Each structure stands twice: as structure tokens, then as C-alpha cells.
Length: 144
Image 1 (tube, helix red, strand yellow):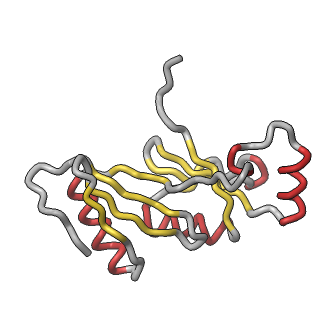
Image 2 (image 1 turned 135 degrees about the horizontal axis):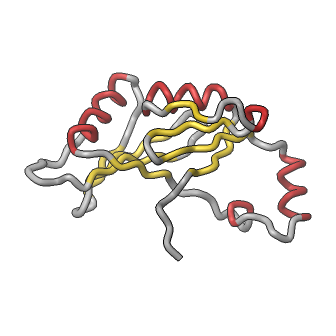
């Protein structure tokens, strides 16, 4: 099997339009396939990376899916969940992302992973996001 990469990540959000606006405004994503599927999910993307935004299901529907579906997804079993979504940037854009997040009042945490530098922050629904760069040559660790 030979894959090209990740096509998209599907995420549930409380307000699909608000989430789409946030990803478009903050991360520069663009709306895609807006005429498809009666608007659900809302697809947003940048380059070859995309996110499918779905409305949060009601508790009753979510419980029914977990108990009735033999093919239930790993995200519904025993508290297994997505830990974070990592996006890659070059050094210049990594530093620019930090400046922009500061300007928007979005708190983030810097981590030096030795092979890469990353910043972690959350979207309005609490999904943890990472922007990482492997472009470390001549870089001093950036601390917010």
C-alpha cells in the first residue's frame, strides 16, 4: 500500500460556521466544496491539508451510536480521542504564526523537541492544535 498523505481530519464542533470562520481568519484556511453534501460537513483547507467540520451530535445520538454500532469508531471507545492536529510551517511562517497568535490574544505554549520546534494552542471548541517546524538551522529557541 502506498499513500500520498492525510487527506483531511474530521472534527466535531459546537458551531460549524463559527469554527470555519476561526480557521479561515486565524490559520488562513479556505472553504472548499461549499455546494456539496447540503453543507455538512463544512470543508476547509490549505494546500493539501483539510478539515471536515461536523456539528456536535446530541448526547442521546452519540450514546446510541456508541452502543448500537458494531463498527464504532475508535474516537468513541473508552475515551480514545484525537490528541492534537499538527500543521507544518517553515521557520519564517512559524515565527509569523507566533506573532499573529499574540496579536489575536490566543495563548500558546512553545516546546523545543530537539528535532523540531512547536507551538500548541486551542481552537474555540478546545481542539488542541500544533504548528511545528523542522527548519531549525540558526534558530534560537523562541519563547513567548
